Length: 88
Length: 546
Image (cartoon, rainbow over all chains, first blue to last red; front, side, top):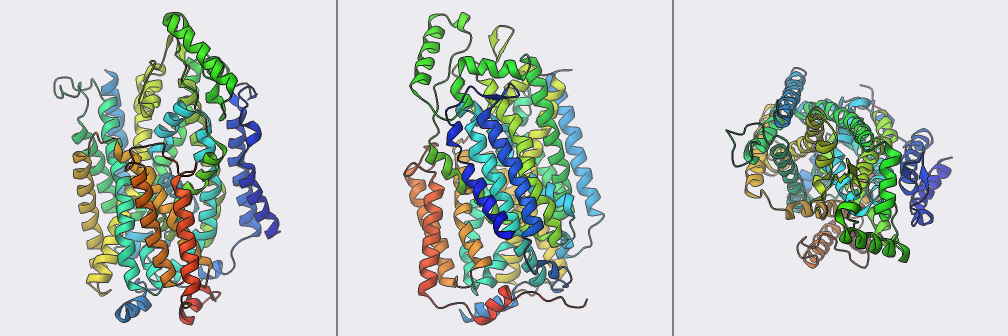
């Protein structure tokens, strides 16, 4: 399922290049919205739906476990790089 | 009461609400640096959605989108908005969640802390710091310049005796000063929680106002169908992206009719503006900048849990659509709008960014005009606040905290320096804004800053997903980005050529590709990172018992 979702997202990015509406100033959606604009509004909605599928089926492994891990209490980020800095 | 005075009353009420929110958020402040910079990593789904959306949608979303649609037609939506919908969510999902988890595990508060750690290099922070700040400062300036200019225009006539030189409107120094002061107050007291609350409020304001504005304007134009029909008659190329021989012929015919009898023809047609397929495609690279924005990084770190991101990932593209579609429609309608037998926008009108304001002023009442001003200020401030806080936290945590105090500051000192830098950064931005008032180049520079951040995005992706990326590869990526950016920026006449393309594409495409190639080649030629670093960032997390 993960591959299907990512493939669909890539296909959406490909479909973003809608050369077929490029020269269409005649077709109107609901009588007032140019089809080139309506199509891309649809791309935005499709993006929302596909990312919803990604959230459902492609959720990154391990990140939820971090929820149970206490934050570094010192807040002093990167003790390793401080040490490394002295060696640079 | 004059329209200018109505605008002043609405804006004052709106800004008072924002200050109130800032002071209220201060009541929840726990006094720790983690609370000031990352809200104790406790922001929930709704606030995260709103703060991410409010931060990414600058004034360009309202003012610039309608202006660009007026100039080049509906193509602006596909170039900017629908690409942003796909790419921004990808950044949140693929990068934001991972970075949040690193931030939570290792206590990061700034992007530079992560890069220093991930690439085992203290000096990388010193290289990135000036680049990140230099790319971010023009954004701050755009906000200050935009706010001062908008307030001066919409309050015209409010104080005719007091401000004669500005036709009774609030002078630039006063308008921008008030906005800076309000942002300063709620960021100073509320920290990142204050900005998240304010962003949520402001995002709701400009979403609602977008819908109301398009409804009122289309009604005055005889309904949306009639408004679009006028465009079809006078400027059909604004309803599509391509231009063919028939379009040229139609344009020349309409122009001849206008020149023969302007009163009868009413609308002077606008020259067709073609968007090529390659140009359109190359806009794909622009929204990658969102992944690299240090102020978005800071908002990611505020999330309560990984799950908090879910709503933002899904709803962000739809919110973009809700804000952008009305603005693009208004911009396109403006090209051919006729009310009571005359054109709404004068022929040869040369300031597209003023199109929205003129449409609102001429086609709605002063109350909506005042509310829209509040909406535009909301869009400006919801980005300005996060950027100010971000630069301040980089100064406080990376420069003072790490390089000067060597990570030996107390928590109280960290908060103190954060607030000190909020005051200093805001004051410096305000003074720079006053100095650069009227400089149009700064707006063009904004697009170049987007390009700079976008070109650094491959480095971020590699840092999160590619074990083999090395310190030398990171340096190569940053230096090649800087060199290519400077070269193409010079080629564009230092931003003077607003429509500059390189090989038919946006310059960002070339800079991003050069940055990526440099990073990959140099990484493969240099020793891999230490096993400890790879284990730190790539070993699956195991829960610990709290």
